[in-house]
Amino acid sequence: MNRNKRTLLFLSLLFALLMPVWAEKIIFSANRMSGQAGNSNTTTSLSGNAYIKTESMEIQADEVELSGDNYRYIKASGKISGKNLKSNMEFTCDGLEYDRTTKIALLKGNVKLDDKDNEVKAEAQLIEYNQDTEVAILEVEIRLTQKDNICTGSYAVYYKTTQLLELSGNAQVMQKEDMFRAQNITLDMNTQDITLGGNVKGKVTETKEEEKPEEETEEGQAAEEAEGEEADGKQ
Image 1 (cartoon, one colour):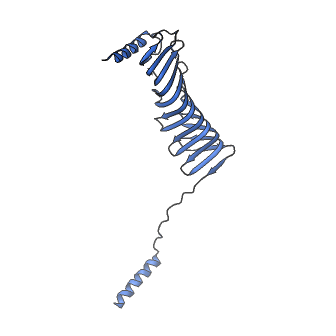
Image 2 (image 1 turned 90 degrees about the horizontal axis):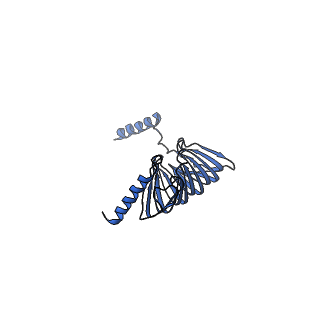
């Protein structure tokens, strides 16, 4: 085992062991650390391939800062990726702030959120996600996709548990060639039912059924048989 790996392993074990026994365990690794591991009254900074894992959250970033009582607050920056271990939500972003007490994560800058359980993908410049309620609030440059739905708007609330989406501010939902616009749109992702409110506009493309060949009538069949008999007689 090389020196860097030994250092990372030592820091991870030290940090986990020095945490109060009643607190949620935190496992971490990084190329560098400043601060006092296990001291809840100081700020601890991790830099270079920083990795943090709690009971419900896994985060990788260039820089991570731990602060507050029992390291309540986690702040990350630079090439962030992570996963909510309980709700199976994966994410990437430019900046992150996570409160381990309230279980609320604030994702900032080029945010991408992937709900693996429901095949829902969301993009925005700002997403606030509550782990306890499993509700995500999306703001600025919103784009959410699910099945044939492409949803955009300025503000949205996504309810993971009930699979309900509320859109507002230039709200629009595209379903294949169909388009719906309104000030407020509610989409039930289970039933695909849409409720529109305020300045409603839409475009629906009619689906044409393929024309089936006409069935042969008894008269037509009789005429064909007569023509066949006449031809035989001439021979």
